[in-house]
Length: 406
Image 1 (tube, rainbow, N blue to C red):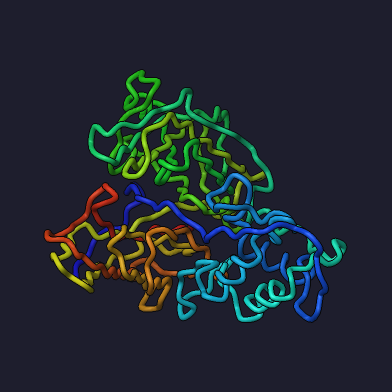
Image 2 (cartoon, rainbow, N blue to C red; image 1 turned 135 degrees about the horizontal axis):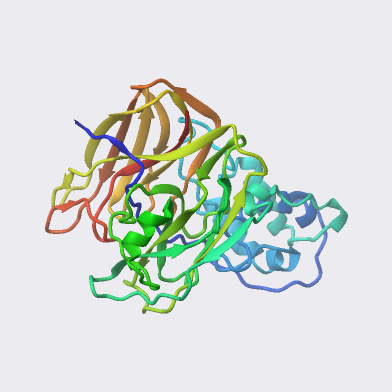
């Protein structure tokens, strides 16, 4: 075991998500209801809460579940996926801190979809439809700014299949704002691996950009002095609305730097112009937040390892509150666990590179200065050589980001 500091400037490498298989068929006679329930009364409430974050138009899922016709067309695939536990993917162990917007289905939700499908997938009465879910789960309730780079960027394989590129976006801030919501939409989903948004003083950003309109290579971090993280994005993740009374404060005159990790292992380069949508607080938030990183740089996963674990510890620098956590590894990962003060914050016992996100807790964790943060990562390594920390997708990582306030 070894100790490392917390940092707010470490770059994350995030995964491309994939969703379940598409079904087939078409709407016709909605059929009798039997006792299997209907789309509008029994199934749509489940779909809204547990499926539509990915299964919506333009998102990462292979089909949208935005209406009865779509549900009918895929009802057999839906039933098979939930019955097997394949969908919806939900990785955190329930033995740790409860998190908001849990996608995992209980038995009642599974049976609602299975029995509805077995009954012929009837529509039912549209008047029974529930209201749309709250905007904090499927989008931003208010879009205060829509930002993008001045021009598209086409990634290259100059450094292999991973291209980290930073561009400047100017929010035009004449006064400080508190960012309370974040929605990032990549231009080319097949190659955008992750996005991190930073803010920094204009002079520091301009010194790094050196007049370039196309940006710069930025492995590891933005490369800008004194930059602070605003938030991150992974494909398939819904728009993020930060916990009430909190937000990331961006001072007047600051510019934003968008770091985009492009991975070209399975797709050809293409011009990308990723878009960032921000929601600002109407009034200054009571509790400005920061994003801190606990990370493990020093592990070495032996060749042929089937279950190799490394543990690192750090301490919370100030008394405050932890509202959310984003644990992260790459494709060799098997398990990642985060403990704060000896209590389990997040445990992903069956790690899947394709399903990662920032988890906000239903009850925030109040901590004192010096509280221990323990990060444990377990990997497999079927290859012939050791694997350590690296920025590429074929390398490995072990880190957790904490969304925290004083």
